[in-house]
Length: 286
Image (cartoon, rainbow, N blue to C red; front, top):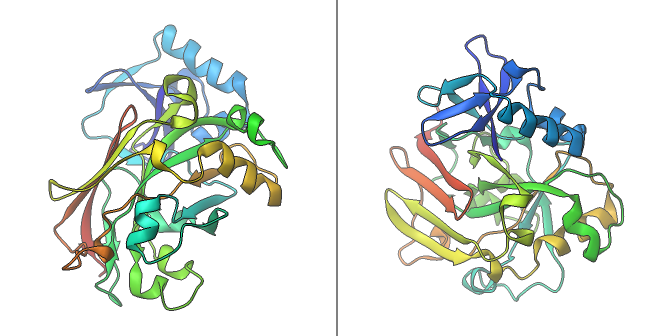
């Protein structure tokens, strides 16, 4: 299934499922929860109920004109992984990490599909980063690597928009990675059964104004999804709806000569094979 979140005319969230390129099913109207967060907290029973609602013909609605929301509304934890592709570590002048580099992104720092991402007034160094997202569906603490993928409900796409001068002022990256509305998340959540184990072997690309600036494969990650789930769970008990943003490949704007920064009027797209295309226009902070 490809599930997504959208906003109703009254501002309330709702849960949808893609039928095709033009149509979706309104799962909330069929009696399911209004958010993927709530559905995942029901465990496999929640995903099974969503499949059943689709089979029974949940109300259909056109995709055109829908206001997309991030697939997960309020994760308890959103881990982000740095330097997780060898070529990206090299272009960033870092040695390949021996352990996952983990920081945090807050929900205030991202927006949904087709929503504008914001270049802040204090910087022109607004960079793109195409990333795969793993979404936790089953709680666990100190999860063994061989069991880790059983805790992943599905996958999505992230543009880890980064304010580079703020990110690199210190050896702590959190500030430059969490400017309001600087990242994109979506458009959909794809259940794990529709993708290869660990979402391995998927082509991942970023396009800026139609020009391909990143082109890689998720098999090139230094630390795979199972390793990341296990590592993060060593420190904190994972909960349904937690997300792990798994890192970006080479080609980021900071490493180019000349450097390439996102600016108002640009359109940034992140595409991952089997999941879809996340599209965000760029605007300046007002």
